[in-house]
Image (cartoon, rainbow, N blue to C red; front, top):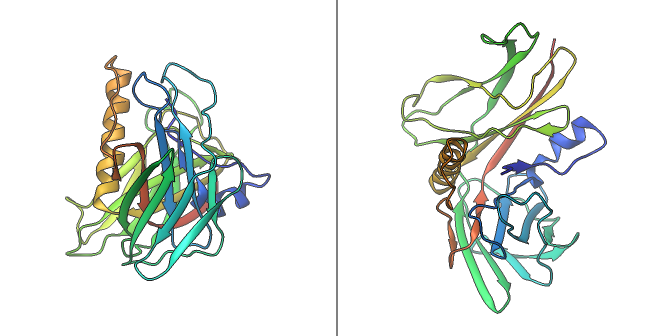
Length: 262
């Protein structure tokens, strides 16, 4: 099972700057043909919602896009119509998300109307990212990446991090809340075993401030991945989409940092 996937770009910088359009390949359960909705609304201009059909998680083939749907997102005042670009990818180039607003997604396909609601949290600044030698690198000259930020006090915050190395997103899920770090300066080590990071590698980190429903979703997906690695068949994480569909709809803020490993 893959989790998140970036749209690739010729330049690493362009890739990371445009990361608000990335989606997750959520193809859980060994069944096929279910609708998958992958919706992202961010505080940058240009939003995308991707529709596809899932395939068995044992199948590595491509996932069929769903074309011809009607897709809209409303902030309670304005409604934005999303036009289909590449097959199954619905885009609004003029929409910008704002913290504190609640967004409602509506997708009509196959005679069924799917809806979801997500509120964009306040922005928490990503101060910096740093690198260090890994503790258990088995003699390899590899690096570990850390993210640093100040968590606001007396506010429940949830975060999701994306890590890109040389234009490729790592498969590890990094999701956290501030149950034990409320109001503190936070140093999070983005520990992963997917790729080795060496001097000269380009590294990008995106920090997303997500709502509680999305934290539950990502944390459940992380647990499912762990169970799958232990030989337990995965099940579907709780989605905020009604009626039940695979995937998610997330209104979140995003901030990115780059470094070249030394």
